Every structure is written in structure tokens, then in C-alpha cells.
Length: 113
Image 1 (cartoon, rainbow, N blue to C red):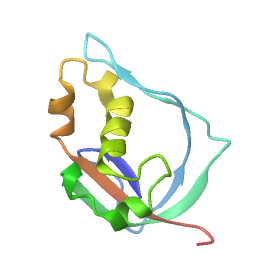
Image 2: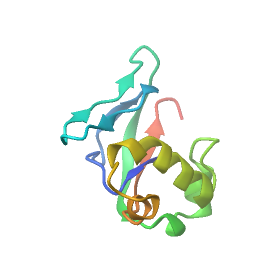
Image 3: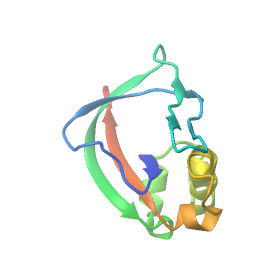
């Protein structure tokens, strides 16, 4: 499982490469967005099998967490990860306002699994 804030542009049936983020993106005071810096040399490829948009964080199931990264195994860890990842993107919003957007959940079946 991969989590984004609120929504994702991923689509079921499409192939994706998952890459590590080296430096988080951010939104500048003038509204411009600085994209994250990624490491394209380290990736895993997989096919999107399911998308859920705007899922409240407290409705993510234990099974969905079981298939997530080791550092995102419960709602508390998901909240922390989303705030770490998106806090700088929404400097005018409080943590509660950011988290009320919910999450987008992408289920990816990795090659070889």
C-alpha cells in the first residue's frame, strides 16, 4: 500500500515505479510548488490494483496497514508520515486541516510478488 494525502492521480491497471524521495517538495509563499527530489536509480516496479480516494485515516484497515511500509503500520504512524511529507506543501493549514483531507490509498502489486 502507498499513501498520499487526499487524492492520487494513479490509475488501476497502470504500471508504476516507486522511488525514494531524497528531499521533500514544498509550496512557496507565492504559491509556486517545488517538486521533491527523487533517486531514480533505486526503484521497484509494480501494477496498481486498487485506488481509494479521500479515505479518512481512521478508516484504513489493519489489513491495509499490514501491506504498507514498516514505518506506517497504524493510524498514528500514517498521520505522522502524511504531516512529514505534506506539511511544507500546505504552510497555511494546521495539522488538523491537513489530516481532515484524508488519504489516497494505492494498492500496488510489485513485480515478482
